[in-house]
Amino acid sequence: MQKTAAIFHGLDGSENSFWIPWLKTSLETEGFDVWTPSLSACEGFEDLDKWVKEVAAIAPHNHFDLMVGHSAGGPLILRLLSRNDFTADHVISVAGFIQPLPEGPAAEQAYPPGFDVRAIKNNCRTLTYIHSDNDPWECGQEQGEFMRRSLGGTLIVMTGEGHFGSDYMKQPYEKFPLLLQHCLLEG
Image (cartoon, rainbow, N blue to C red; front, side, top):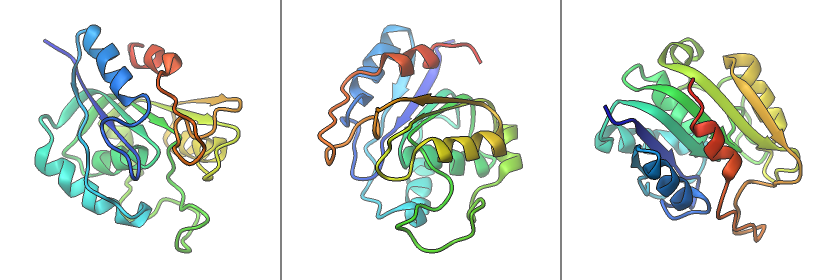
């Protein structure tokens, strides 16, 4: 049976953002059926419900062998897994976040509403977090460490890689070989 993958972009992104087209092609070469939706505009972390509903309505599968999320795509995946109607063998969050970002509305420094730690752990076999030590939007290694402590999994911290793709930082990040290597690991 063909393996399935879903790749989710971050805010203001699309299926053509940064390394997503390259990763999609690379995974297809490895035999994956890859879904890369371009989701509607989303204003921020507190608006993730919009994306959750959209994905739930259009997803071609409710189980994926691999789910990858960049920036806000990471918490999107964790929200989907919290619903108990989505599962994944391996989830990779790149520059993702779970704690409220400093410029967002004040909130407790724990999981915001909509995240269910037990459901996430039950609905995903392997979790990997890839972060940089210099992310400009507080999506750096502290976020990754918080997710690793809360959910388990593997944290990879890279030096000087920013947000792993950013128009603002003039960081095209068109290829991401380390990410592909982790996508191909058996969970």
